[in-house]
Image (cartoon, rainbow, N blue to C red; front, side, top):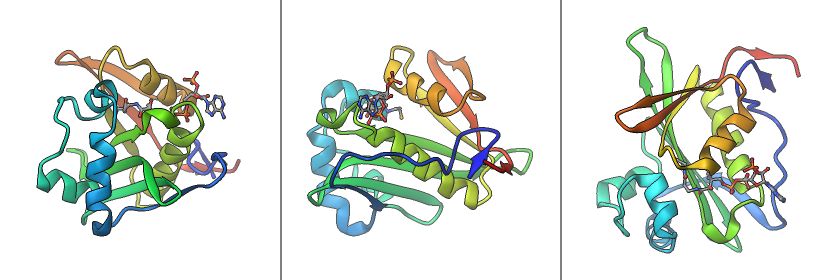
Length: 175
Ligand SMILES: CC(C)(COP(=O)(O)OP(=O)(O)OC[C@H]1O[C@@H](n2cnc3c(N)ncnc32)[C@H](O)[C@@H]1OP(=O)(O)O)[C@@H](O)C(=O)NCCC(=O)NCCS
């Protein structure tokens, strides 16, 4: 499926053996290890703080809860990437989703982030989400590049020293 915004259904090529699936509460300990093993820069870019282990409520949310879509990428059953979208309603009554994504450093630039982003965008569009949002550190060129590559319609503004991206999912149109 193609939309006016992100190419939600575009085929994403994954490295051999990499799988994408929904996260579940059974992933809690492995997710904690995955986050602890990230480089400080990747952890900071994703979570904006330098903690090595998220608080328990955050860990639970990373596993997926009602209103939160959480997806993992795995290789040999080990988590190598995670993306999460938290749905909310805008003041105008539209459904929006706040997205956060991170890929293990050793797996960067192999297509995992693109595949996770496309997967979560397609799932959000199918729930009626009209736009994804993301907060990005100004120096985070990898995230900015991912957004601009996937959505030429993304709008990026500066808010409180961070960048705020709004990525329209749009009405599905024929590919
Ligand atoms: C942003 C992030 C998720 C991107 O993940 P990724 O897996 O490296 O993304 P991809 O591999 O799909 O794309 C990255 C680059 O590799 C390129 N690439 C993808 N597959 C490739 C391949 N097989 N061979 C060579 N290059 C490839 C892409 O074209 C892209 O290039 P570009 O940066 O010039 O646009 C990752 O950098 C990350 O985890 N950063 C830390 C957390 C973060 O910043 N999160 C965002 C804020 S929530």
